[in-house]
Length: 366
Ligand SMILES: Cc1ncc(COP(=O)(O)O)c(C=O)c1O
Image (cartoon, rainbow, N blue to C red):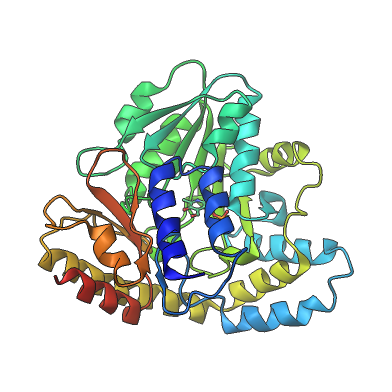
């Protein structure tokens, strides 16, 4: 892919703005299908881990290739048991899928069958919403506060007797903001007795706040979605999981033609090895902090405000920047500066390696 095509990809992404399946499909069409060669390009669009997969995961995946003629029933259970143990739960509390997106879809289908509405913050991770709408689950979007924090009070106020699901992404995407554990626990206690509470913890490992997985036994409506795509660096391998009360997991599985079968044997092997490589996870967390600090210093120098990020991306306000940030970055082959709020000056950029973020800093020092 040449630079023009890549820039076109970035422009397409901004224009589409739907952040839906279509956008993901476009991105795939313009990158992986044509070429997976990003040499000379710094790609900061989808919060992918610039270091992963871990060396142990790579080795395990390569070894599993030769055994791909067999269905992976046993290995799926190994992963479910292993995840269960990490969260001091059982394999019956865990269901796995081809990325957490698959499971976000299953949960919204489950909510749609209850015939009502859903509530989510705005902006947030919207990939699951078009399918939710298609199966009859309209989603009311509740704006984040002026300082880009999830507005839990407004979300609670927006609930009515027909609300069947509330979606929260914590830490938030694209804002990077985090709801402190005590506030989130209070929210769970309020909301989970009333409807499904889908808590997307795709980025928790980058933060210092705990998972809410320990509440699933008490609140069967609480479903936590997690992924191997981010800190584990396996976005292309497609592996994710949900944690919930066993009765809830069973209900989710009843909506799938073949539950727990979305992950290939190769990706399962990688996911299992990843969980064993916590040293790599810590490495990625530290590197992310270092690289993020470089970017935040550059934003400060350029006079741009940003939300304190607890994730592998930063949400920043370009209003005070004298040029078009996206164009300035693209001129240096840095792609991924994206809009999530129509007509606003806020943009998101993923965090790459420290070297990549130094190049971003140089580009912004115009
Ligand atoms: C908040 C959030 N949830 C879920 C996902 C999807 O992850 P997966 O690759 O596991 O489908 C993403 C991907 O960017 C995300 O940002």
